Length: 350
Image (tube, rainbow, N blue to C red; front, side, top):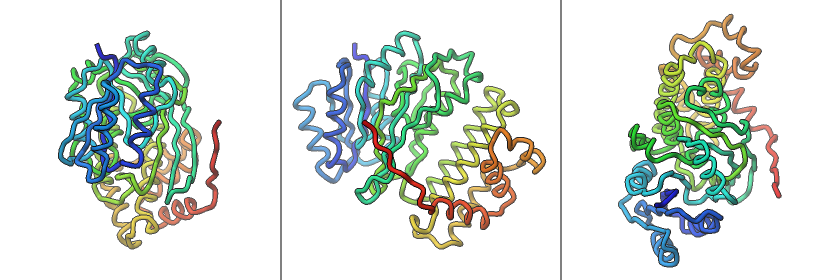
């Protein structure tokens, strides 16, 4: 029996796919199948996949017409034979013992999900801009009846589907699949929310196992498109339903305000004219459109926000307040000005 199916959507990644595959083949755990799903690449990616498959029987290559990352991952889920599912993007890397350590934890606790930490490297025009790691949670097993108690830690494990492994039986039982209407980002967040809505048992493993390499020129989600904003709006509405499902809407308001504030800042930076080639008026129109999302309707009063400041932080409360009061111009200036300050530093790891 195959223990883990690893799904990699491949699209025009001739420069990176072989390194990605090699990082998986050198894993100490070898009972896996690697599904390379060529999503209609127009470069040599498909040929490279076939060559790699010829040298290792664990690699299976599927060639299909171009449909996008969500349809491609769903094809992988349809074909996967493993007890657990893992994901990898076609230009990222598995780090040592990702499969062995996390498979062991999944089996030890009979967990539906194992979430682990990742390293992120941002590359712009071939230059490393920053390197950072996420470790915002402790090692622990969270049974499904303790989800609310440890929600803050689970939530801090991030939204990248590749930072985890998932029991296939759980995914199939709840028909958890990627939304194929999401073409320009947030498909991972939507997928993770679906998982959490179905009361999984979760293992948190704070060790770093996945190297996410964010190449701006290679990333679909980095390219400005209204579908990105619409997808985020759908995800936030789903996240609100998650809070309601677990009856957290009144007990974890501070976490919700912090998340909304962070997403507001994401959108502002996403439409920054330096990156999006949009006029300032167009940027502000996007912010106004984002403000129509249901999660911003019936916003908290100033006095309520001030009371939450100690828990949410001044920045989060200020961002949320300005946005819900439609002070888009002022908020835009504050966020964009701060993002342009020379504060980034490159961190190196041994």
